[in-house]
Length: 596
Ligand code: ADP
Ligand code: MG
Image (cartoon, rainbow, N blue to C red):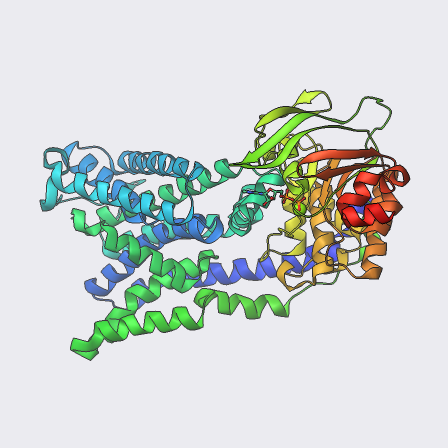
């Protein structure tokens, strides 16, 4: 264990130092901002602008979670903000409840609504999700305006009081601003910390490549629902403080235009960062004030400024700042001290690890897989070959749950997995790579592999340190540890293929599905891949391989199954199969067969 803890020290120290500097800078700026109103005489108007910015920013931080981290569009954030505000407004004014009780009520209402809206991501993504959230926002609007008996309709609610805490009254604008800032700072800290947690990494994985995340063992629906719920909860907090801050609320404070404003603030500052959300909110609230001297044309200039920032800074304002900072502090890696990957999979059980019974997968009229049965023996490399379009990838997709078979059954280690989702199968020990590499492109190499390492019932636990160690060991195994800090999209193709294998290995698989891992590799890389596969077999790993490269196939395969038009046409040891007349015919055409 000593060796393991020593292994990541250089990287950890650099990260730790950067983190401390970050925390210190955050604390200083936070304190200065909170003290400004007590030192500089500010008009109530300016204090109101600060208050608005602080409460909006909490809602925008919710957008950072759902849109920035998880990549799910949400055009209903103002309605969650409104739920928080109305809970406080109606709760304190009409029902006479204590502010803090209504705050909790508001958070509860908003999170329940966010949870329900999040569930719609089960079937709908992208444009459809945008439509669903817009509809939700419109329904909220209609209810608030028309259900006047309860919501007081378009007239809104007036006379909302400020809270007190431990005998402290927050009636003074400056004191109330400090209270809002305290909650804002807590929200910033939470959203800042989130990406470094298991769920936060899973969120970013879903954003980068949902299918790969699911296959890597991430319960993608749960992650998306969690993101919506957290996002709505934060909006509820912001709305609650907004209501108490301004004493008056009405439906037009929480309409679709406000949701768009929250979206713009998120994108403007940089959707992928907590500080981006705050910067974007501040700018979008302050900018119109600065531009007021322009009189009639101020709105046009304001719109133009927003467009220009978005066009020239696609990662937002904070994205630009962070890009500079991170590049300057990349750490070196001491590969020798990384612990070797522990992989050993028991091979003493003589039963086949995988049994496939008569599976079929039809796409409309296309019988991509048309009744295939096979068994994969433990600790072997079983290779699936066949001409393009013969159903190899579809077979793999059925094996790991991306497709449900039209008919037939699959057993892994005697367990019927036919109806399981990909993440459940990953949890049982199926790892996989894709023909057209699917990595989490804008995450670092080590983060990609950490997503692979984390899972339910993880034998090593899911602490950050354990996942980090596991990821480094997996990277070392494939020879990619030096690249741990590189953002994946900046790596050459051959390296990306290895990272994908490392990501699969990190999750403690016992059965590895590799879809054309040699495609696009040069000769040296192919040779290294062959060595890697043999090393894996040496550890007892069972590999189900799709491959075209004949020399690699002959080098590593124990058994070969040949598909043509979705059916198995041959199976056996490499030399038998390669000289089988039907295989020669399928590969080289009938004439070649005749010649042979
Ligand atoms: P291989 O990997 O052997 O090249 P595939 O399994 O990718 O072949 O494809 C087998 C057949 O199934 C092809 O005719 C292909 O067009 C079809 N196919 C694969 N996936 C889909 C899909 N999602 N929808 C419709 N047809 C598909
Ligand atoms: Mg294929």
